[in-house]
Image: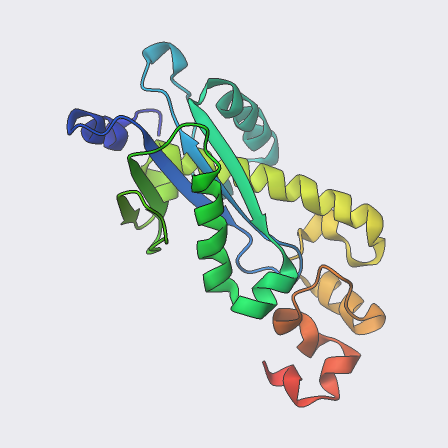
Length: 211
């Protein structure tokens, strides 16, 4: 996905600043949901090769592309919503809030916002949702890369603070190793209680374990 076909169509229709938005971290048991928004340049000299859905790229390739995106994009922004807020408002609303923050954090005001999947945001700009957008639209793919690289690095830092959970390997997802650690050590401050309580000794003794 090296072309800006979707973005160029919108530029030809009169939109001057098309932002792609994506999230990482809706499913983990721990850590924030992270969103990025990216406005790519349409200039040929700023063309970025190799952008794709971040899940289809190696960690090394993601990190290389993230650096290039940060250097060549017209604007980019990253936002996060923490585990406590996810527990309070649910993961869907937390993701919408996170995407909104990422869009509103852009240094260039977008006149069209493209979101991955089927997500409607509470923003003041025109928007469109595109299923599998992270694999079809360059700016959304670029956003997925920035969000993934940022969140993985964040979880590595959390691993230093909470080494027993293996966050540097599982990024907060519910691997067997992570679930065993929850059973042994309980929950830490970055766990999403609505996701992870049922795996803890505390949760096994309470009705809330069924959440």
